[in-house]
Length: 350
Ligand SMILES: [Zn+2]
Image 1 (cartoon, rainbow, N blue to C red):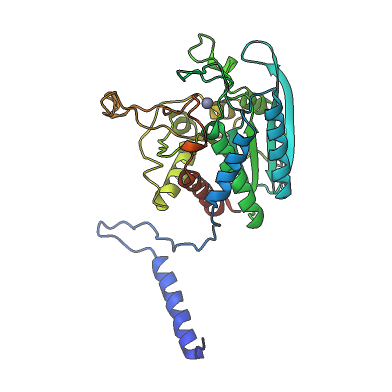
Image 2 (cartoon, helix red, strand yellow):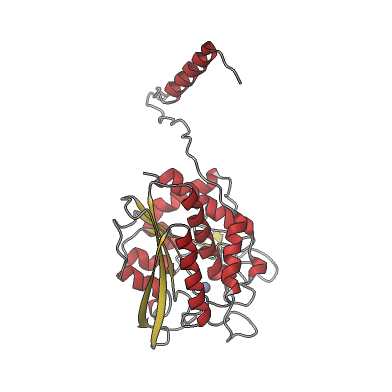
């Protein structure tokens, strides 16, 4: 298309005038000043490929259950490492022998992937990668391990796809992805303190953080982010320890029109890996975790009357054999990945 110089000049001055105008303070009717309206920044945010993310979940499930100290667990860890290395990330295993959920020594493996190791603005993205050794919430085959497509395949799948996407779309900031082991081997309903049986890999990493140029400014944990019909309310510990990060993430989701997934209600305080990353590791970290509303046998929403909000739970697939590929929804994976990419490229870029 040809354009005469005069038209170009007119267009340029129009852009200039518009920019100045929206950038100006002007007195409001009350005599104060309205907040400055920043012109919408034109930041490039890459697309998130839902099919690729889905394949990363499928591939983990194809290994079988990923229970610590099993051959399937080991094979899956090697595939994760090789895959992330093929995208140019630096990957290391953090192997350790810890006191397990049964008080016996337990071999665990955290998987750590680093992008842009020299950047001094860093973010932690994490998920657990082990799957539960038993299906204790099921009515049958309770003593058999679950496939864990959602818990934990989905979080790992989203972050692997994010790693692939970032490798093709350079980001100035640095990222640490940590996949924690032994999150999900704990004892449900046990009188023992939660920290003795759950979230063991995250506790170990929080006390023994790998060498980083600087500590990440904040962290985002994903747990069960692939189930169809998922809802992510604002989890209580996240609000308490890292409320600002919750706001950044949920506002980003709102801008993307994802308010039916990232709902504005607050949820209970949950024990998950982020508790220890905050309290032991000293990194402000939030948890994005599926918590659908609880319904009674008549299908009515059970209310928390005191706080005037619905009661929530982990869903009917949680720690059962129903947690397989049939419940995974590409749209949910994509939505979470898209929000993370927007946070990275719009909020963290140096
Ligand atoms: Zn779990």
